[in-house]
Amino acid sequence: MTDAGRAAGTTAPALKRLHVITWGCQMNVYDSGRMADVLAPLGYAPVSEPEGADMVILNTCHIRDKAAEKVFSELGRLRKMRDAQDNRMILAVAGCVAQAEGKEILARAPYVDIVLGPQTYHRLPEMVARAARAGGAVIETDFPAEDKFDHLPEAAAPQGVTAFLTIQEGCDKFCSFCVVPYTRGAEQSRSAATVIAEARRMVAQGTAEISLLGQNVNAWRGTAPDGSTWGLARLLRELAAIPGLKRLRYTTSHPRDMDDDLIAAHGDLPALMPFLHLPVQSGSDRILAAMNRKHTADDYRAIVRRLREARPDLALSSDFIVGHPGETEADFEATMQLIRDVTFPMAYSFKYSPRPGTPAAGAPMQVPDDVAHRRLLTLQALLREQQDRFNANCVGLTIPVLFTNPGRDPGQIGGRTPWLQAVHVTGPQSLIGTEQPVLIEAAMTNSLAGRLLDHPSQERRSA
Ligand code: 5AD
Ligand code: SF4
Image (cartoon, rainbow, N blue to C red; front, side, top):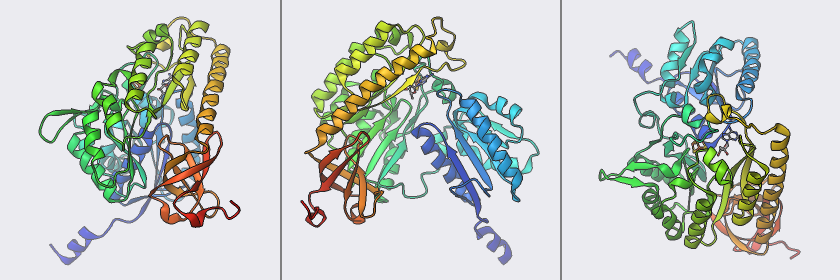
């Protein structure tokens, strides 16, 4: 090899600006990070604005409402920006709208260069090369035979004090209302060895809290280093033993996959935080059956009871849908009763939104919009009351807070309780990354304020 050749081989590619717009769930946030990672060797570095970018990726969400319309309006805006700038901007649409409506995107927005579904992100560098060469657009929305998890690089940069780690993707449950089984494909799990190795690396780089991610994370079944198959509980036990890892969480779970070992793990593992997002969707057995959830409201109550026996301070969060086809006033009241029985200090609630291609979209007895809207407001008022009460009950308690970021006001730092409430205190930045006991002094709806206990110098002088 000549000197010139050797030099060319080792010279870093010219810096290109990459802007990623992320809509939707934590899985998309994680995927956006991985897309940036696969593009890094091509010289792409993330920038916070689309103006002047060499490539913009729109990572889309298809779960509710006017998903496609929102995509087309954003693409129109980006196209104008691209037309106004000197350098060429590669425009890519990723995520679940790309998967579900890829062909329609290219028909209606032929100026888009790349359309890629969530299973194909590892092929992005090759698609970028093809888009640079080709006159036309590149589209990849098949579910490839190779496992995306085996081909994506690990997270390049340190992930921060709290970080997500995707261990499972896809869904085999086919709830009547949901597009995820169609857009994300069948359930797939990453092997235990790769998850453990990545978790260790994250902790070595300063991560103190890991949230395991998956569309059906508690359906995770991984090949263990000894060739046997582990469930999520076994994986959690292994991860909890990593020195320096203070907190573990997992989301999102399905009630059907809460097995005995997983429930027991909540009692056995102090690092597993006492807060679980376990969507129930409805409290009516009739609607749960129509939703194809394959469990009853009492099954859910029983799981919660057993979880609380294992971990008495466990708090629950859930997703609720009101106005699913066929939902009567009595069905809605059953959901309200379930909320009163279980209590949810945090929850997400949605008005049912018909998704093309899902069974519920064609079902008879669609609920009128004004009825669904009224039910949503009633349900949200109850959830808000429960959240306020939960937060108010924290006042006067000393709670361990993991500090993650500087606060809004100078001299403040912010963090999270085990129950994911945001907390602000006056304190030094040096505590970011550590867990400290905090005396909670005030509760707002979305956050708590408190005082550091172990740092007398931080105590208010007026106290
Ligand atoms: N309409 C309303 N909400 C939905 N969700 C999923 N699909 C729909 C839909 N078609 C909600 C569910 C799910 C959460 C991620 O989004 O509650 O748990
Ligand atoms: Fe959608 Fe149901 Fe699968 Fe959750 S379990 S992703 S709601 S189909």
